[in-house]
Length: 81
Image 1 (cartoon, rainbow, N blue to C red):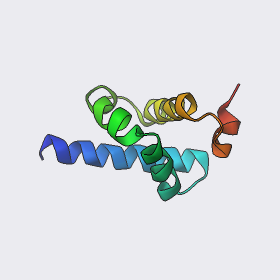
Image 2: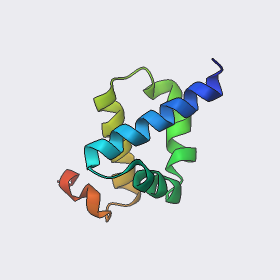
Image 3: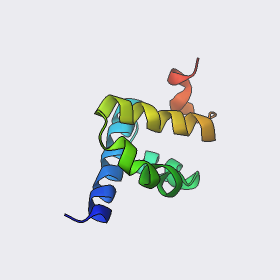
Image 4: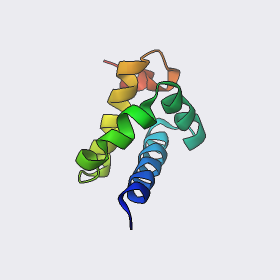
């Protein structure tokens, strides 16, 4: 399987698992990540480093990215300190 296809599958994995943790749909999370350029500027570039990590770590990193780029999102309130 070529790297770009693996990276795309990884991005889908990140979106679906993070959405499940946050209690929202994958489409909602996709829209928010897309709005903040998180897919292009975070998930794809992080593929080499993150795809070797466990699901919990990957989801935590995705949530941390979102908190840095739009902490006002209602579905992130449960993760703010």
